[in-house]
Length: 358
Image 1 (cartoon, rainbow, N blue to C red):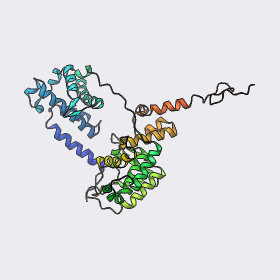
Image 2 (spheres, rainbow, N blue to C red):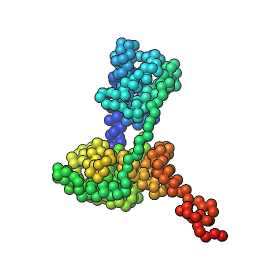
Image 3 (tube, rainbow, N blue to C red):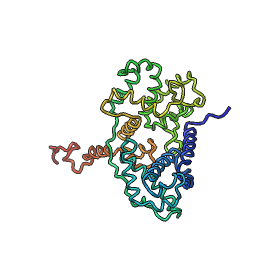
Image 4 (cartoon, one colour):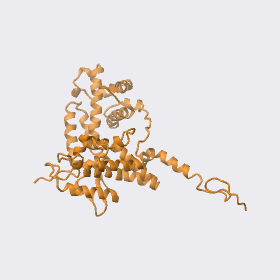
């Protein structure tokens, strides 16, 4: 019997197959570029780069008189030397509104990053003489307010998942069969801050009750242990009893969270699940699995004040990423600390003058 592949292995194989299919319609010289980043980037990241680079060459094929003479897969490498910064800028302007969709600043930055990576490889290795992308400024990102649940909203959300309150009659018909699983998923997301991809990738053997931890595959492909509290352990334990009675479809025997069809749950299904329960509880907040992650990070930082611990638990490679997200909380701590250091005893910590004089 063939060994069942992990979710991460399955996703990697799918990404590799997709990349190979895409390379058939991309300029042939890109093959050496993709091979050069194969061991530095996750397959999904390389596929995303390939899609963005394909969008660029589609645009150039339609709008550049030199590129239009070739089929896209036959565009020669020397074309890269002929493309000017203005061509890149016109492309960025073009994709601001692309296929009836507005691309925000982050999407534009990602697409320009893909081009910068491609050009950097060929220029660094002296395969081309000119890198026009260096003369194009990255889009300026405007920070968005971090949306998270308040403690009372967290409690109300979990109560709603368990009781089914606020669900539609149609949703209630399935609630009894799903509430244990759904409670485990939302409790896990709120109680650990793991990413949605890490959640769907969990296998049964990744849950270690003896050491109160789960093993996840982090962004970038490395494995890490995430420790779980009593509430999470209890919710997972109750679900595990139910999970033992399920008969998964072939290939998903090891999957922890199963859909109603007994296949591994996907990212989209958990997004829908969270939206279903959260919308009645917080109608003015657009709550997603990532917002549950932000909620956990906020709670952990409030309790510990340790930004390095929060970064480590959330799986951020750069603590500056964490600091940026929780800067507002840091400001609150600074304000609260303003009277912690007393210079003279005639002032009490509240800032009021002490009537007792020496």
